[in-house]
Image 1 (tube, one colour):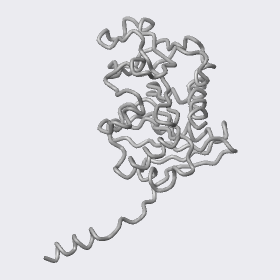
Image 2 (cartoon, one colour; image 1 turned 135 degrees about the vertical axis):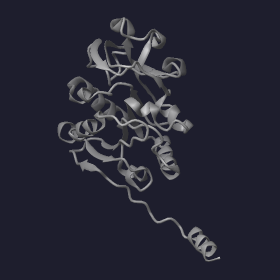
Image 3 (tube, rainbow, N blue to C red; image 1 turned 30 degrees about the horizontal axis):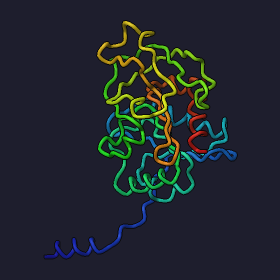
Image 4 (cartoon, rainbow, N blue to C red; image 1 turned 90 degrees about the vertical axis):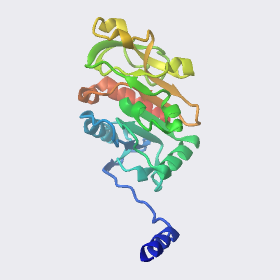
Length: 252
């Protein structure tokens, strides 16, 4: 009986306010306010901490204000009230809980911007809203890193306008369960599979092999790129400039 009374007493109490654990932060000079979320429960990427440090460095280089957390409470404890863009930086697996899902979805539908890097498409598989937000779901990738050409599919897009039309890169090239262009997503970058032949697996060739796209289907602006698996990506000035432009565009 004492156990039953205790359970009833606990159930009658309201949950205490949550306060998220903040891993790092820095303040810029009037640029977008960025929340970097990098929780991983499926795969652990060596590049995750490198990406975090590169994004924090944008406080000095671009004037951004950046907060980093791997705590889902960051989405429902008030931090989103002072956030313009959330970057899912190599997140993977189920990383949010019910309260954080509610807070994040409401914020996006109210116009919040989102940037997804690499394994963001392997995040929150069982939450339809998040999968639609990213655009498509990760399916597979070749067993090794491959050097290939990335082609700019829309040179007028502000996120990729300053990139070379053919951009030689080494990365882990994702394939997806659906073709982004078939879903109405605005493809801005694709990997040229023929430029990697014969290294590119024939069972993963797609023709137009999208690796970055945008949309505004939920009110806010969304940019996703499948690139960014390697630590070297976050020392590449062109890659970092693209991410910075994506942050500015999604924050607008």
